Image 1: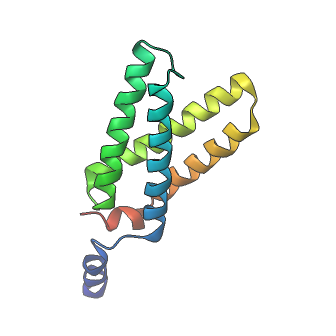
Image 2 (image 1 turned 30 degrees about the vertical axis):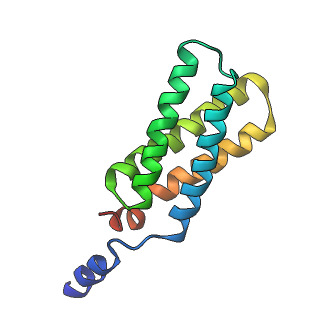
Length: 123
């Protein structure tokens, strides 16, 4: 029992390679959504402000997850789930296969982030 406690405490604070990859991809997607919102792709009213607010929260969460903070993990996990839900919803309306693929990737990232091994390494 003592060996398990020592092993779990020695792993705390060490980043898994998947977390870094997820953070880099989500940072790129967040920046692309900000640029699209600023160029009017989401309209000019509440949708634009909503997208910019969500992108700000996700960017803060990405930086928090890169520092292995629990609040960053929570924001990024919610962001992955929102990206997947949005992609699946838009796919149901437009039937664009690229949205289905991106939604599946976001769902896999969500499932990776909610694993016990990933959560044990957060500070």
